[in-house]
Amino acid sequence: MMRAWFLPMVFVLCGSVVATGLIWKGSSGTGSAVLVVFMVLAGVNSPVIFPRSISAQEAERRSSVDGRPVVFWRPGCKYCIRLRIRLGRDAGRLHWVSIWRDPAGAATVRAANDGNETVPTVVVAGRPHTNPDAEWVRAQLSTPA
Image (cartoon, rainbow, N blue to C red; front, side, top):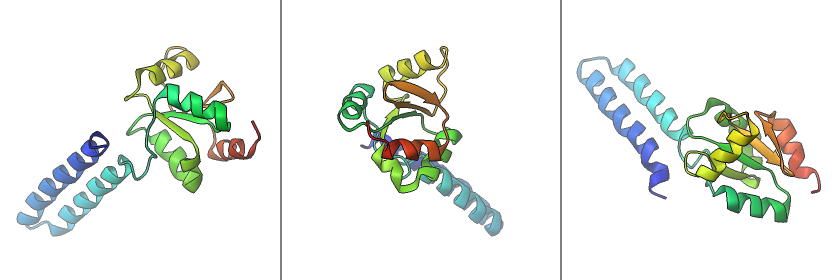
């Protein structure tokens, strides 16, 4: 669990250092703005935004049982963040696999995207869909398996 918070904590620490330096130089407005930007980056890359990542094998097993889609993503990907935000509370009902943490997940994404690690890639009933619309993904949650 600590690894999941490493990048967000680096953003908070760096933002704090830069903001403190700017505030000491008399640029309190700029320092505050920089701190806010770093805090937003920390939040976007934290486990608060993305549900806990599981292995591709575990996600496939769970998906075969409950029929829910599997989302392959990577930290910092603006398209993954956009999908997550647009899904809102429904995001917690999906199975999330970080391709940076799971080599099998990365291999699945490469196989689906002509060798590229294009994310988000959503697998529904064994069929991959690259960068799908959030409404379409939400509709897959209500479709019986």
